Image (cartoon, rainbow, N blue to C red; front, side, top):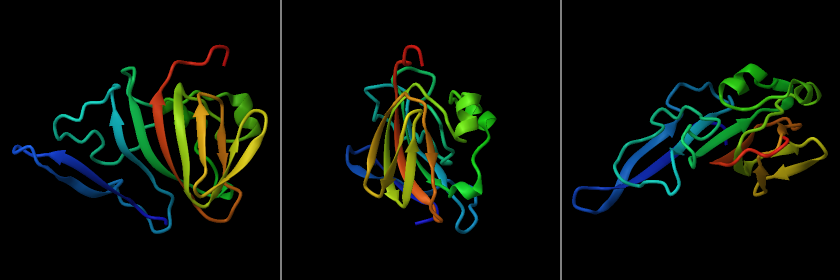
Amino acid sequence: MPGKIRRIVTGVNDAGRSFILSDAELPTADIAQDQPVAAGLWITDRSPASNAGNDDPVPDGVIATIPPAQKGGSVFRIIDIAPDTGGHRAPEEMERRGAKVSRERWAKQPGFHQTDTVDYAIVLEGEVYAVLDEGETLMRAGDVLIQRGTHHAWSNRSDRLCRMAFILIDAEPLANH
């Protein structure tokens, strides 16, 4: 399944009729063959979200880590998680994208981070371990993890990409976390 993500967006025209507003492959930047993809598909800035207008909140498919600064937003993205042998993002990159990083946890498992969100994480293809402070579980295609603002990391111990869909919803920070 490597490659760009096809995103189709609906809208309403001036006559009040539904139509396909856009049909594009994201991200718009060039991606080398068989390289992991990270594509932002949609962002909302509040809940309930507005369906008015035809503006595209992520026209280039650039990935967002957390919902917008306004409370009540959401992020929908698809990410390919490369095998662990390919390395992990730097903690500084995760922090720039809004994640909270504990260097102590990172030293034990690269990629450990936390966000003030409720995340619906769905494995679309492949397999990956969801790693927590205490324990881990293997997830395969079709499995869903409800990640509730906890410190976590992803570990792909296979020899192929794992494609996941993530829906992140703004949440209150956990106390003492």
